[in-house]
Amino acid sequence: IEWMSDPLRLQWFVLLSHGGYFAGAVYINGKAVIHKTFHRYIVRRKQGGRQSGHDASGGSQTSVGSQLRRHHEAKWRKAIQDTLCEWAAQIRSCSAIFLHAPGPLNTRVLYFDRSPLQKGDPRIQSVPFTTSRPSFQELNRVYATLNAVAVERR
Image (cartoon, rainbow, N blue to C red; front, side, top):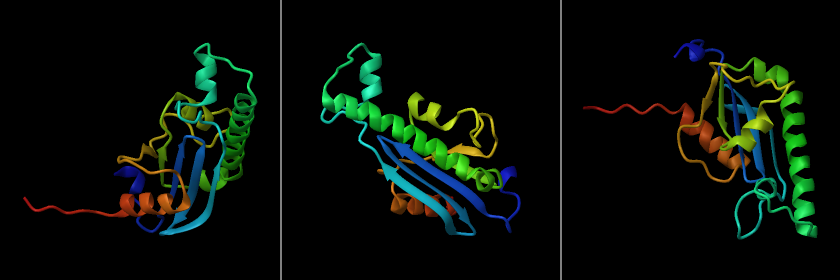
């Protein structure tokens, strides 16, 4: 694969974002040199989905819980975008970028004006398997799985 052609420069960026949870890390030769995880309360308990998704479907509420979820979603979005901007130099020098951020809302959070991530970048790949809740432990598991090579005899 072309974007992994330099074996001496294994610098990868792995990002997991789902349900108000965020985990991201830049790995150089197998070690996480920078990483960050955080969580915000943005998902409607027992009803599923984000508060903004509920609002968009015409179900706008004014309860304290809904206001709190809206506020936390704005903080969550800003925290992700600030982190990406802060890590821009490291992300741009990565030879591979792996993302798991399902859904259009997650996509909009990652691809913004000053984002170091650009649609169409050949280095960007989706994580090709199921992931658990975003955490540093899950980032390390995803990285190790992506970095492993399985050989099958036929």
